[in-house]
Amino acid sequence: MSVVVWFRGKGDLFYMLKHQCSTGGKFLCLVALAVALSASGARAAESNAPLTKQQVKALIKTAKTPEDHMKLARFYWYEADRLKSEAKDHEEMEADYAENPSNHPVPKWPTLGQHCKALSADYRKAAAEAEQMASLHEEMAKAAKK
Image 1: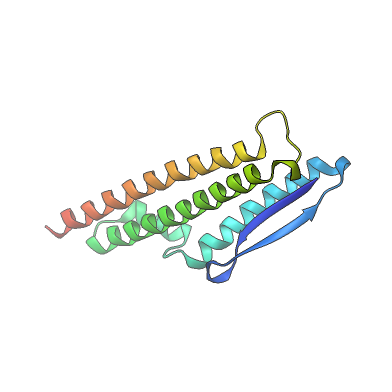
Image 2 (image 1 turned 180 degrees about the horizontal axis):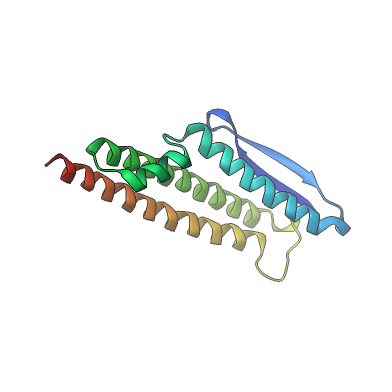
């Protein structure tokens, strides 16, 4: 079983890690894939994010000034962009799976392309919610100026 994992590297460059899994090691291969994806997402978010998660949590509890709310707005705009990028990546992977179906074993359900399509939709929904949060914090910043 071949597994292709896309990572976001420094400078928003993408590189591909291809890991060959034996037929008997599918479970371990899938576990390694899940760990690699979660670690790569955390590294990408931490390297370019305007705030750390700890800073965001603290600001959520204490934000009163326009500057505080604008920091949170920028964070949520950043998150929306990051999530849209993830959605786009999974849309591209879905297209790649559809273009080369004979190169990939087809499970009963979900197929690899369906998996990517579902993830893409989830990322787009999360991006829209992050944009709403950003807009709300921009409105709170305006209200705090008064």
